[in-house]
Length: 251
Image (cartoon, rainbow, N blue to C red; front, side, top):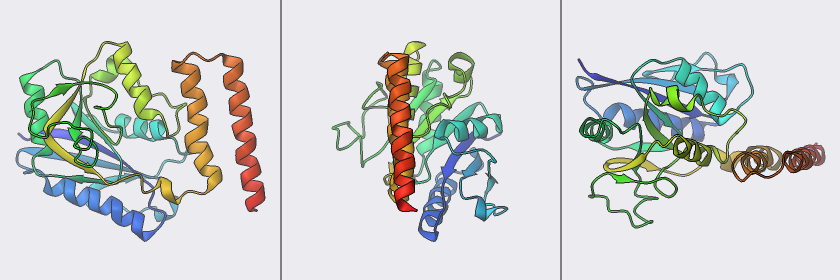
């Protein structure tokens, strides 16, 4: 029996270029492993509702009827799947041959591994991490938010992802959360997944950019840096006003 892995991919195919990015991610994923050894259950959470009922080839494509939130949409995918292994992914990735097998091998060698990051040449290599080295324990600077591979049982300890975080700081929040519960994260250099960059974020308008980046900053500061609740409310109100003003000027 092949090992089963649930792959949750968030996509915002607002144009053909971004749709092609999601297609490329799925295509490289399907070609990366022998299906007789590793079976991927791919769930795409698509934000562009106008594509409905389109299904990306080889996937179950879902169109949530709730507003976007990175953690919110990831939680939808997690709850809609059931394999022992789960990989949380952006739609701007290139999966290289044997990436998943390398992670499963590392987890089998160390059963206490619950959270791992694959090696990205566009990030880890520039940071000086050896692409031929053994698994390396680490959090910030090691953990990458665009591809997080976990054993499903981790959610029994940490709970579901915090849906108050819309986009930015989701990886930092996850990192802090697993540290809070004394769960180690590992970089697996033998597992290669290339992150191409935040292509979808580059296409949003200024108001949406504020909402996706600066509003989460205020909540993260309140939650983890322990800024006062009143300061959090004031920051959120000010940012919401900026978003409204930006939209008004656009219209």
